[in-house]
Length: 265
Image (cartoon, rainbow, N blue to C red; front, top):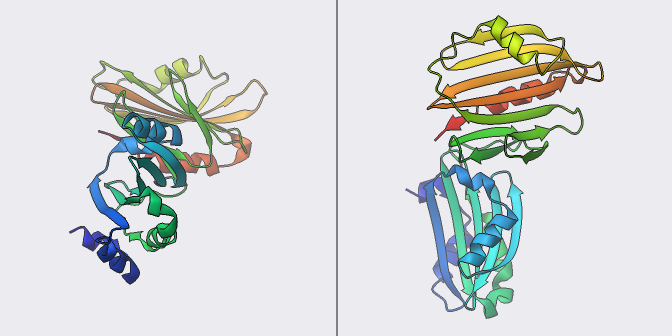
């Protein structure tokens, strides 16, 4: 079953046979169910985990928004890992050898990783980055090229070229439906934080509100406000985009694509 999902060159197959030789002790190909927490892995978090397990971190490289490579050492054994994931599975190719042999077999290890290919069933586009939040147990996407950060209240990302700002919040809610919130009520509430608000579009159902409006910033600039509220499993999820009208529709369209990747676990 695993072999049908992976392709690797003939020399890699030969290398797997050579694993029985003394210089290379362990190889492992793992395929496990996707865990959204993998998107939160960083060089620091992985180093902390390895250190806590008694390993010495040696190397980390983020290869894409859905893959990275690491190496670490413990008790004279050096381990190399290639980690990649899609929306359904997580794949790990693990090679280990005695540390004293690492330099001599490093070219072969690079050759193996270079020729290894995984055909992903549900690939994550390079243009987006996924994030996961424990509170509310949800996953969402944002443009990979945007600067981002988190606070105690929200996640936010900004396009440094246009100054568009995308925010994501979550809160517990005892609401059973959003359908009874009228456009007028929504506009009155929203205009408290966004002056000279003009509604362009509003749609409300039991579990979602989608609204678009235009308002004036403090710099007397026209800003498009795109706002999506989703009610699910006792939580209210909010996605908010403030993008200058003069910047065009690119950021607006990018966020619409990102919203397709929202899911609750």
